[in-house]
Length: 223
Image (tube, rainbow, N blue to C red; front, side, top):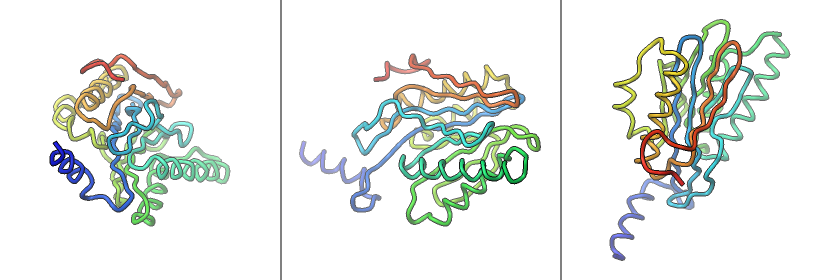
């Protein structure tokens, strides 16, 4: 028994720095006709310990732009606060709403320039008058890519095949939200670092529709 526990601890922490703990989450962004649905679980974990059961990992950056956070909760909260301030200043200076691309590139610059000190993998998604619905994925090292749909976090490993199979273009808002919830529920059932409730936000030109689900559509009862 002692050997098993020691081996499990070693396998979990072998790639971590001194004093660092493993984290986990599941975040998703799926486009639909006229908008984007973003979603995330609500568990904040430090190794095998659940620190917060109902955290909100979907941050509003601007009127029609949201970011899904994965990695260090402190790092990603600080980054989204910076970007929210920058976008407010940009809107005041130009008199126009910020673009999703601008938010993603600002965030990418901050992550890349501080890649040795930050743990932040994020998804920036939303709607703007130039591109319409848009999704950008920003990896831990600062790589920024515009993608058809995005998913990230420790739970994303369990739903790659599901999303590849069921994603299609030009879905309705209800179809996109249902797919996001289904994928998140599967990830939360398999990944020990993902759990809690499902939060989603549907972003369109007309406004944003926030929703949360405590009764998961798949898997065991979540605590």
